[in-house]
Image 1 (cartoon, rainbow, N blue to C red):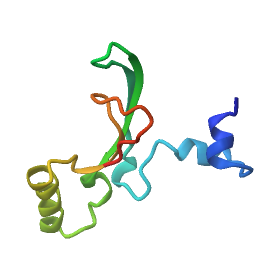
Image 2 (image 1 turned 90 degrees about the vertical axis):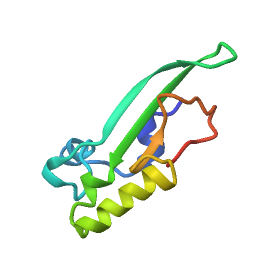
Image 3 (image 1 turned 45 degrees about the vertical axis):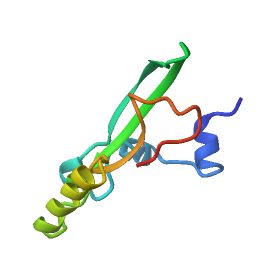
Image 4 (image 1 turned 180 degrees about the vertical axis):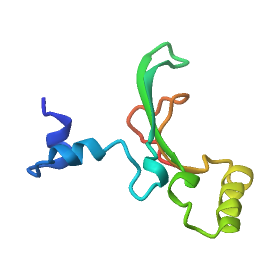
Length: 103
């Protein structure tokens, strides 16, 4: 077994301040934090699968865009593409069995 931090960050050591900054969206307004969730989901086959979700709405980190462009982007994601209006990894409603579910 290998610690997640060793796999993700390798030999690089994070300072205490860098660790404290991890929950915050870089360049986000007003110290905006990622929206996190974790839990378990029962699949249709009766398998209990651990799931997680991390997301950040466009409005939390693209606030410096032209206001109308941001509105158009969010509208397109929701109404045209039927996707989350931001960036998201994981899902609290779908188990993917390591296939990945980035949006």
